[in-house]
Length: 140
Image (tube, rainbow, N blue to C red; front, side):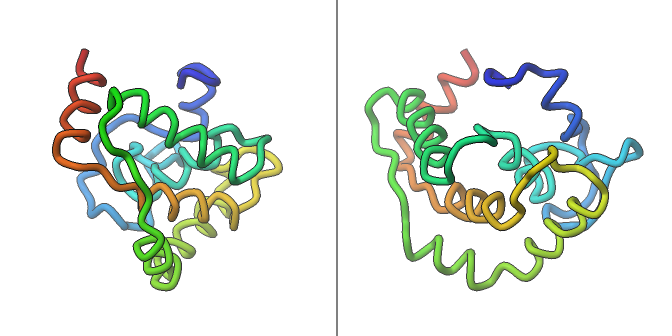
């Protein structure tokens, strides 16, 4: 939202509760993922984050934002989780192709890079203290 503004982001993502499971392959009445807290919405978010930059730069941008919000507390990355997410990703690939088929992604979106960013961001680690600081930062 900070990069593009709410109007741009809401071209690709809804903001209402879905009432369905986190990994359901479903869109809202406007043809968008319901919100960023379920897999289709999180994948859609990944498609717009620094979309014209390299995958490495996109990941660094998000993790640096987490680190700022954590106020110096621990924010890390679990390669084991990343590899597990990627190896067990059939459902998320199905969601990604469904979103692509329904025109949810911005023009020129690379689906495989978007999903790699999603898997990487699913593999970010935080302690209870750092997660609490991030939560307090967002609540402020």
